[in-house]
Amino acid sequence: MRQGPSVGPANLRAWRVADDLAVELFKVGRRLPPDLRWLSAQLLKAATSVPANISEGYTRSSKKEFLQFLSIARSSLAEVEYFLHFMHRVELIDHASYGRFSEMRAEAARLIYGLMKAVRSRLASNGSPNKIREVGERYLIDDAQ
Image (cartoon, rainbow, N blue to C red):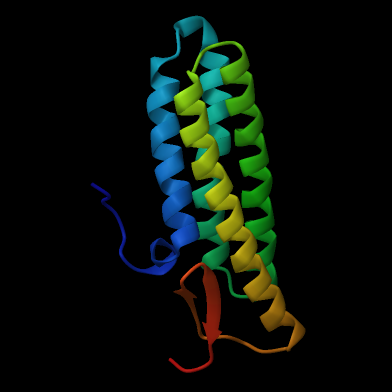
């Protein structure tokens, strides 16, 4: 069961999916043999960077900064994608786990991209949104509080 903040970035589905992926990959990393501690550290750093960057960007004072942190989060997801590929190729994770983690990663990437589009759109209109909300798979930015 998810625990943690119910306000702020935790309201964003992109953050929640990235957080779930980080938790699942943490469990995988803990099961890696001691001689692969380096791989576990790299995997966990990349995976936890995604929700951490969404959180940090969300609290920044400008939407331009938020966009930069979302870009960093997407880049960290690319690292996660490679580590999943590598672990699958060297048989550290089975095909089913690889597929499940890859789907979670792809969903997080899609949601972050949608959030980036919404923020870019708002920047292009020179607006200063007060609230970001989700509608289905899309993010909307409201001017009203």
